[in-house]
Image (cartoon, rainbow, N blue to C red):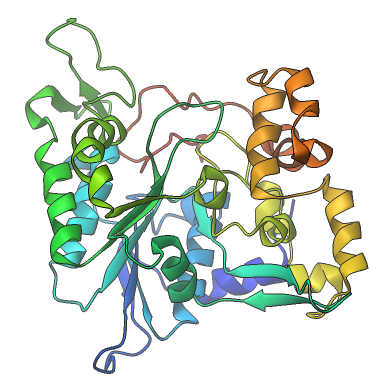
Length: 372
């Protein structure tokens, strides 16, 4: 499926990306202005195969969104950093480094290269019958909502069918004393002595000395499991962590319209779902034909997509996978839209499974992706 005009524009804006690049539209950031740093890394950056892949286009979209926001700085590390750390752990060290770099990052957001930030929302005013709006939000505003008023760190759980208490596809941390403390604790839990790189194969391996076998995927030796084991217990009760719904930042999206209707701040395809339809889709205002659609137009769009909401996204995936009995689903108030994330996600987004829980090479940032 060919990318939309919007996606092509994003690719052209990011066409200058090299093995390691950064973008900060306004170098002279005004005193007191919040600078949001979006961080990504992939050592395939700059290769034709990557740039023309869906993942390259998702990366270009992230860069373009950040470049439109004068309070956003974009950092894409395409160096051979995978040989320094396993891809699972590289992200934690990359974010820690940028907060300490002196670039003026007041907060940083990690985004896997199989994920895309999304700043468009379709909202309707309950007090004004029939009045809706397609709103475009700058990256800093989207990220600000995710942190909320007090949190120093935001994250979500894995979306179904996975079960980790923390999904490391998209997460963010503030450059505050507490935020840096959280990152230090996370980094300290990296068991470097258990990880080794097979240079010939380009694969990182983790050896569990207790079992003599490979470490459990997403267990305590991986960044997600380490966060759950060492960070959550210490900081959850301090009120500095904010858990947001997985459908807000770490679930796949059918299209940009679907993401806008359910208020997704990011779409994460987890190396498992096919992002082709999302990459090729147009903005919500283009699909709806206006930035001021009527409530009927929005209702019709929702009906076409199966009815979308954050709750529906969660229950839709769970029902499809048998996690919720169909009788229980009918008892839920949101049952009329329960297939949202599946009807517009699971069935149409799932491509050929790429072994999400399998071994990863050093050229994969987080979830393994099909060979490109």
